[in-house]
Image (cartoon, rainbow over all chains, first blue to last red):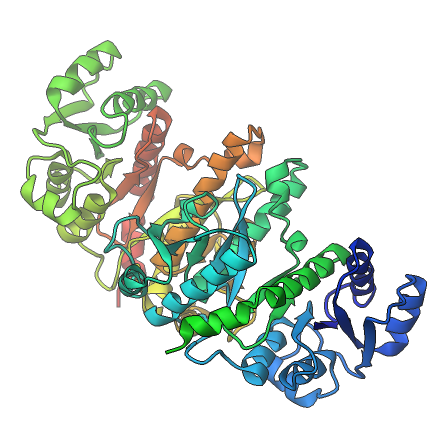
Length: 313
Length: 313
C-alpha cells in the first residue's frame, strides 16, 4: 500500500507533516509505504531530526509549491513540478494508491476531478465535512463546497457516496440519510430539495429518514446530511466559527472542543477513482496522522470498489 | 397609534400575551392603543386577574384559532373568524396600524402578502432574523425562509429593506451589508450569488461590503447579511440549536445566552405596506412586550414610508 503525502501543504509545512509521519509510524508496525512529496532540502533534515528512518518511506522531490491563494486550475497547469501536481501524477499513473494534502483546496479538487476523474456513473464527485454530535459520534455533511449549484440527481448520488463513507470509514452501520431542508414535512423546500426528496425516497441503496432542518444538524437525527455545496459550505464554516467563539469566551467543554475541526484530519473527495484526502490549512501532526489512517482505511476497506459497484449498471 | 395583537398565537396563549401587555403598559405611559384579538372568554378573565384596565385596550373577539400545524392558505380561507384572519382584516381596512402574532408563521406570511400586499416596486417581501454578535449588537439576516428560491434582484431588494430596518429599528447607522457566500473574493459563489454580487455592488442605496462566509456570520463583518430564504432558514435554525446545546451542557455564558432567540420578540415582515411582526411559537411575556415596542418603533419612525420612498420611481 503506497500513500502519497504532500509535505508542502498547510500553514505549518513541512514540519507538522513530518511530525505527523513520525506519529503514524510510532503507533504500530504499519504496513504502509509513505511517499513524501516536497522540497527534499527541507524534508530530509527534518526526517533526520525527528529520527524517521524507515525503508517504508521515500521522498520524492518537488521543486515548486502551489500557494494557498493561487488560482487552482492555472496553478496546476503552470506548476507541473509542484507537490500537488506530482502527487496527482503519481496517483493517476498508479504509482501510489492514495493522495493526501493540506494544501490549496481548490487545486486538490481540480486535480482529483481532472487527473483521476469521477467513478463511472457519478455525475459530480463531492466533498464531505464532519459535524459533531453530542453523543460523541460524527455525522457527515455532503456536499460542503465542491458543487455550489446542484441538480436533484447530484444530491441523490451524494447520499449514496456519503452513506458508503459513513458505513465503512466512520463505522456507522446502516447510516441514516437526511435531506437538509427548511421544513420537516415532505413537500417543503426550494425547487431543488422538493425534487431531491423524491429521488432520495425512491433510492433503495440508502436509509433515507426524511428532511432535516438547521436545528437538527448537530443532533442525532441522521448520520449523513445531504445538501448542495453552497448550503453545506455555509453550514460547515458557521459550525467552525462556533469553536472560535468558545475559545474567545474561554469555555472549556468536551463537546464544544469537538467543534475544533482541525482534529479530524481531513475530508475525503468522494466519487473519484482513488482515495484523495484534503486537509485543513492549519493541520498539525495529529491531523496528518489521521489523514494517513483514513487513506489506509479507505484502501483496506476497498471503499472505491464499493462505490464503483453502487454506480455500476 | 393602534396596534393589534393576536392573543391566541404561540404555545402559551393567551396567558403570556396578556402578561406581555401588562409588562408593556407597566413601563411608562405608552401612547399606544392595543387591540387584543382572541377568545374574549379567555382573555377578559386574564385581563382582570392581571389588573389590566386601560381605556387604551380593546378586546376584539375571535371565535376561531389557526393552529400551528394547519396549512396556511387553507386555514386563512376557511377560518375567517380566526384571530389571524381578523387581524389582517383590521390591518387592511385601516382600523389598526400594525399587527403582531406568535401564531402560525405560514398563515402570518400568507396574510401579510395577500391582505396588505407588497410595497409597490418590491418584487418579493422578506422576513428577517437576528444573529448575535460578540460585541453585544445584533445583525439582521434576510431572508430566513419566506422565499426559498430567489433571483438576484430579490437579494438586492432584501439588502435595501434590511438596511432600512437595521438603521431605523436596530439603530445601526449606515449598516454594512454583506452577501452570504462560500468564498470571500468577488466571483465566488453559486449562480445566484455571483449575479447578486453585481447588483449589490452597483446599489447606491446600501453600504455593500462584499461577501461573507459562514464563519463571518457571528462576527462583526456586517450588520445585514443577505441570502436566499433556504440558506437563511438553515442558518437561523442552526444558530437556534446552539442555544439548546449550551443549555444541555449547562454552560452559563452571557454571549451564548443571546442565542436564546426567544428574547428578541419577533421578526418583521419587510416590504409589505404595514408593519407585521411574527413571533416565535415559544414567546413569553418579554417577547410580546418587545414585539409591541418594535411595532411602535416601526410606526414612530415611519419605516414603511421610508421603504416606499426607496422603491419609488
